[in-house]
Image 1 (cartoon, rainbow, N blue to C red):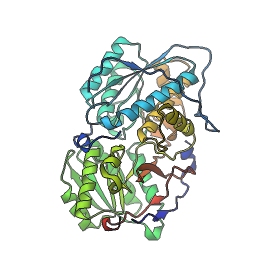
Image 2: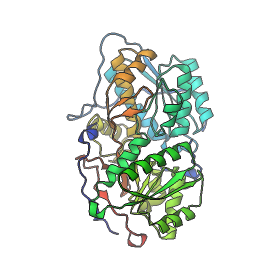
Image 3: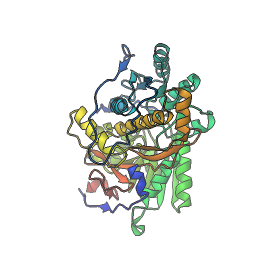
Amino acid sequence: MARDDTIRRRTYLKGAGAAGTVAITGLAGCTLGGDGGDGDTATDTTESDGTGTDTGTGTTQSGGDTTPLVVAATVPETGAFSSVGQDLRRGYELGADRMRQNLDRDVELIIRDDESDAQTLREQLQAIVSNNDVNMIWGSFSSLLVTAGSAFAENQNLPFLGIAFAYEAPHNNSNYEWTYAPFPKSRHVADATLGNLQLIPEENRPSIVGIWEPNSGWGKEQADYWEQTLSEAGYDIALRETFEIGSSDFSTLISQSQSAGVEVLLSNPTPGGAITSVNQMQSNGWAPKVLKYVRGADPTAWWSALGQAGEYAEMCPGWVPGLTGNGNAQLRESYLSTYDTDNQFLPVLVGGSYNLTQTAEQAVAAAGTVAPDDVQSALRNTEFQTVIGNFNFQDNGIPTGLTAPVGQWWDGAQRLVYPDTDSDRALEFKYPIPPWSER
């Protein structure tokens, strides 16, 4: 198996870097959006201090208002998205521990299982808000669940933070006032795709692009951004075909891509569909030179289902091991010590949800109070520094100034390939994907 094909990473927007395994059957039913729980879960553990010069962008708040901050959240601990539920919870829990220390106020984090279902999510949030003096809501996973939580928060006039939510249209069409997404959106994903391809020396750079477009609002939006961004840069969009979410037969798309000479394949499928498609690529003996599956290749179940067949695949999950500064060292130390693991590559959604808690902390510190109106104003007027980078929010909650980190699966781990950092957990971009017969 060829393992020495590497591309030297270039520094790109240097400042931006400062800035459970489940069975395949459990993923097959994933859609873009278990037990109902026997009560609220409030986290209350102690986090270890960060080390070195990476201070975690602490926002210690002393004196003044010490009213407790009460946060409502749901995560998909059961159902179609259960493979990511634990990672979201752990990032939230580690962040809440840090917030208690830095804000000098109690932080009560109440988490319930939304069962990967939008209606259940609304019911769980209603139960929490009805029985607690909630100041803020944190989101779940996928556009379906995050937008359901956002709609609830908008109706309650409560600040809402959501990740795993690249879809921009709801921000523009739903008159968001309380919803903020500290997470790369569709435009950022397209820009990062171009930046990642530009790491390849021009004489070896692929030029023929294929887009597999899920039949959904976000599927079309992301495909539009990819087509516009890459076409303007001189790439040939030789194929753009739509498929139904939940499809289990990708043979026609594979044949069309092979006939069109597709070198770069881009899509944002569900995890189950993404895994199925790679298995079928292998069966058909075809692979592109670059494969990027946004959201589809995010879960750790990708590797448990595919093993080395899943190597080389790229993703854009919001945070990737290899990012540095802005609290990344503190996050890593806290995770390794709290969960007693020797896995040096943290799950990507732990970093994404931890970044959300940093945003919440900095907004509360800037507001000096937990009053929703004041926190909302702080969200609109603060520059945030989190483990995914530095950014501000537009009034509709879309982040600006953010570079979307790109990860690549290699030797069983997701590792940063774009932008460039000096971390030993980052990776030299592996290109091209070799034919199946040479792996």
